[in-house]
Length: 221
Ligand code: GAR
Image 1 (tube, rainbow, N blue to C red):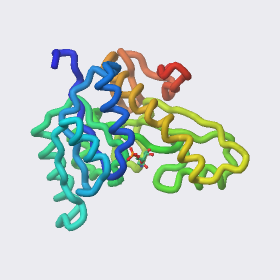
Image 2 (image 1 turned 180 degrees about the vertical axis):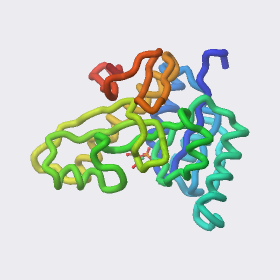
Image 3 (image 1 turned 30 degrees about the vertical axis):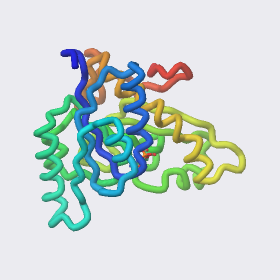
Image 4 (image 1 turned 45 degrees about the vertical axis):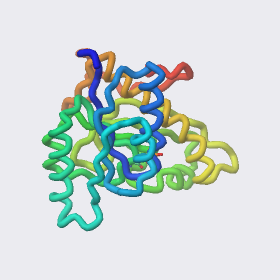
């Protein structure tokens, strides 16, 4: 690993298709990252298979049965301390991180969320977009703060809502777009200095006017 390689930890809870997109982009040479560790709060998360196949160290830290949220967060924190990554990517990690943990890794944790935030934090984003009659849906990546899906926005990707769409069709079409978004966003961190402040997101010392948008060439503009 050269000194310019970004060390990344990825937290998952399920299928791990976005983790796989990161692994594939690393293997193909697009992403100059070392995926230093994958952490799952579920032992049966499908994404662990991708990680193990790729030879990435994995830690399963079950949330079910943990004595408290704080105890679970503390176990994740210890694991992250040992890994000491430059960036923590929540890629389908379906737990809210407690304030202490968020404060400890402030500015280093980013989350992928399937809506055009600030619209529709939380669950059922596809249903919410359809119920609202939105013409567009999409995904966002943001810095993690104490609020639910609430931190400064880094990047977004949009898809049109088509006549006849239901939550499943929308999710099916958004999936591959999310994969491109997560890769482009991690790539941004490998090439440029991306920082969080109370004013928003700074990229190479310039305050972003809003989230960077994914274009057809998989670039954030
Ligand atoms: C993705 O759609 C991601 O946006 C969503 O979970 C899915 C994970 O898919 N995340 C959230 O809803 C977080 N609030 P994956 O396990 O196949 O990567």
